[in-house]
Length: 85
Image (tube, rainbow, N blue to C red; front, side, top):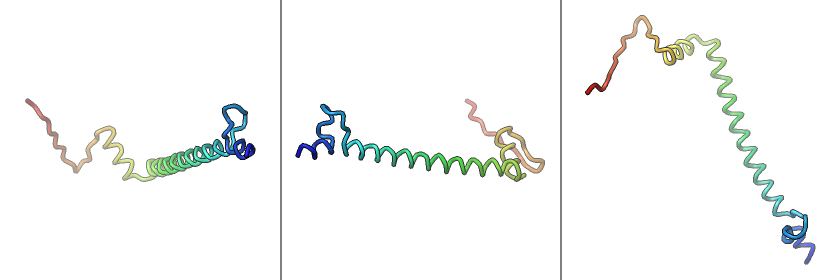
């Protein structure tokens, strides 16, 4: 009976034995960290693909130049709408 309480962490307040409860909590935390790492890796992969497209694809380069710098192509018309009161 006493060993069961020690192993499960029932005496963790008085004895320096974390027990199985802390193991389960740490396993849950490890699962959360692995999911976060997986998300970061997928974001990194998509950024690497975007980086490669910006270096090699001329259409992607033109799109970003227009979006960031506001350039207009020779065959394009710009409409500017403003709310003047």
